[in-house]
Structures are given as C-alpha cells and as structure tokens.
Image (cartoon, rainbow, N blue to C red; front, side, top):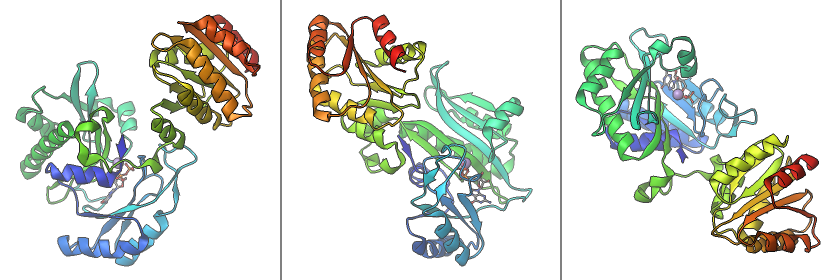
Length: 394
Ligand code: GDP
Ligand code: MN
C-alpha cells in the first residue's frame, strides 16, 4: 500500500528521522497560516509547496515550487491544488492533486555547501535480506545515474540483526562526509533503517536526503510502500489508505476479495488461482490477444464473485472477449458454470463473447450446463480449444 509523502514523514519523525518543519494543507486558504506557523517555529522566510499524489517526478511536472513570501505560498498552493499533475510516473492522463505539503525550504539550489543524496531501503531477493541503496548523486533522476555512472550507486546489505554501527559509518564515509555532517549522517541512517524495519515497509525511498550548509542531514522527500500483509499488526496505519489514488476498478475488486490488476490488452480473464491466472495470460498472448487484466477469483468462486468479476471486467471498453479458465479442485466446475450462467443472466446484455474453459471435478457437467443454457457462451474443455476460441474472436 502506497502512502503520501506527508504521511510517510509523520511516521519517520516518530523514529527520530530528521524532517524539515512541515504542514499538510487541503485548501489554498489554509496555506498562509501553515507557512506562518512554520516561520514561528523555525524563523524561516523561505518555503516549499509540494503536490501530494502517489507518484514521483513531481518536481519535473511542476508540482514542487519554492516560495519566498507568504503571498507566493498561497499563490502556489492555489495553482497546485486542483491541478492535474503529469509526471514521468503518472502516465499521460496525470493525477488530480487534492492537497499540498507546505514546508520549510531548508536549502537553496546552487549553494555549494549543500548536497543532495539518494537513499532507499528494500528487499534484496538475491541475498534474501534487506538492502540500503545509496548514492552521492541524489535529487535528480536516479535511473539516469544507474545508467550513466553505475559506480556512483552503493549497496549495503543490512545485517539480519539490523543495520550495524560500522555499516552506518561506511555509508557516511562513501557519501564523502566529514565532521558534524558525518556524525549526523550516521544517526540519520541508523534511525532510517530502524524505521524501515519497524514499520514493515516494502519500500522506503528518500530522494533527496539533504546535507544543509550547517551540516544538518534531513529527509526532504519520502516515498513509502507499506507491506499489506503486515498491516494487521499496525492498527495505527488504518487511516492511511487513500482510495482516490488507486485504480477505481482495483478498489472495487478488493471489496469482493478479488485479486485484480488492470492491464491494457483486449481479452478479459477470470481465473481461479494466481498461477493459473498467469498461465492463462500467457495463453491469451500465444493466441494473438493481449490480456486486459489479471483476475484471480480465488478457490471458492461462486455466482456472486463471478458476477462481480464480470462487472469489473466489462467496465473496460477495450475488452473484446472474456476468457474464464477454471480448474475444479476445491471448487466444483458445475457450481462455477452455474455461477457463470446466473451472473450472465443477471447482468443482461454482455456485449462480448465469453469463452469458458472448465477442467477438473465435474467438468463435463459444467460444460453441459453452459451448452444448454442457451446463452452466447462458448464452452471449451481443453486449453487448445479455449485458445482457438480466443483466436477466433480477437
Ligand atoms: P519528486 O520529484 O516527486 O521526487 O519530489 P521531491 O520532493 O523530491 O522534489 C523534487 C525536487 O525539488 C527535489 O529533487 C529537490 O531538488 C527540490 N526540492 C524539494 N524540496 C525542496 C526544498 O525544500 N528546498 C529546495 N531548495 N528544493 C527542494
Ligand atoms: Mn524525490
């Protein structure tokens, strides 16, 4: 589950990660008061106004602005709230910005005493451990750094007992720091690693980590994905989900406990079991189609889940055919077939051909149910038959 920058920073602060003074603002009229509060605490006369959306690259898209007066803070908040922000990560449609973060601008671009670093923590699947990836070339496109100067990207595999002091020192050293900045970085990295492990994040990215001209080390940006499988032990994160930022069909699917991922092809598919769903997408490809989605209806597929699956798939105007691929292991094929027939009748005018492939327990009975239903549903028993049918309709 992705969360907003302001939410991520709130959590990080609790673990002692230094964050600039900031306020989250949902209306432009609240921005001036937020900026005044920040000035009262820090004495600053420079602010930053940042769009809060679940996507990076906001700087490049005009979603991050530096303000040097209260008037400008309000002006920028006004510009950004309500805008559709297009960044390299949002796709061409962009995302509607519903709120901004007003913060203390802790550094001035071009100040030679200021440095921007890159830092992220994630799982390294090769070593089966967490890894801290970091670079002295932060702020900008880390992808470009990886491409052009890969030697500037360092990795520290985190010790199973947590990041060790010698590891934190090594990181500060590799970032070229000395004196007070070195010590502050050691502390920063230590609290960041503790936060990452305690909050059960699957990804924590800070770009940039900033060294200010007075040698403070601060997290100026924060992108966090929380591990959904661990949310049950973090009731404090219950309110962090922002459904406005998620694909509406994926939100609807999750309400029916369907594992749905929207894709951009033309063959909708409904399958029981994630492995079979992956294989089904391969078959659609081989038959010359492109899957419009991944949908695992789970082991206990019934009329209700099949109907919800149909409705969700049919919302996509690109869908030209639907392939239902069910293996009757836990579930009986005739039960699913009855579910398909009932759902088909309940929905009414399904405008695309539906191909049903049933295999396993009571497959023949299931096929018979579909064949005699009188509906425009093709039934197939073998995968070959199913893929031939897909080929004939796409
Ligand atoms: P992203 O583009 O979505 O990753 O958003 P960031 O929070 O990283 O902001 C984009 C860029 O704006 C950063 O790389 C910084 O260079 C700049 N930026 C962000 N916050 C501040 C700030 O407080 N002061 C200054 N001077 N620049 C900032
Ligand atoms: Mn960033």
